[in-house]
Image 1 (cartoon, chains in turn brown, purple):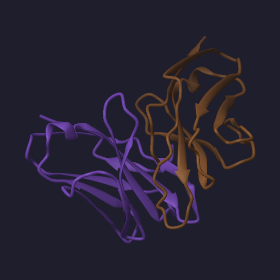
Image 2 (tube, rainbow over the protein chains, first blue to last red; image 1 turned 30 degrees about the horizontal axis):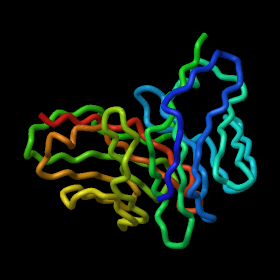
Image 3 (cartoon, rainbow over the protein chains, first blue to last red; image 1 turned 180 degrees about the vertical axis):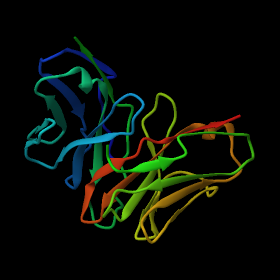
Length: 113
Length: 113
């Protein structure tokens, strides 16, 4: 599985935008970029995923670089509830693979009131 | 709330014993994946079941085994428990036609003494 690199931790203030970076320089053409987050004492939660184009949903936006070697998860207005570990994951979509997720250590996001 | 439930919430076992963990997937989901999360680490993929058949396995020994039932609920069995098996065990369910979004349960915390 292709690897991702994320900062160990980041801090933000409440109601400000947050940009969480992820590097994936060895990404292949069939790798989807997924983001999950894990709040304290909970299982991971799906946030967003994309392949080549930028994606938006009610939780966040995903900006993917043109060469696909990096991406950024954007939380438009951070709330205290967004404090969590954020995981950037590459999932191979080539034929025959199961849909396993390979988690790294993620980025611990702290949101200050 | 993801609709995925796991039981028990916590469990304490001694080395050499066997344990069975249970997962009830979200309604309509025919795929279940199991993950092990050690303290301070991201979840690690154990295996996945699709329509009662194993559909991929991570780097875990054969003493980790599983089952998926006709109602798509699932069990994870671990034999000959070792101290390093102490972890949070997570199950995630997804739909076969929408595998990119996995819904995680809250996990079972297993402590091996």
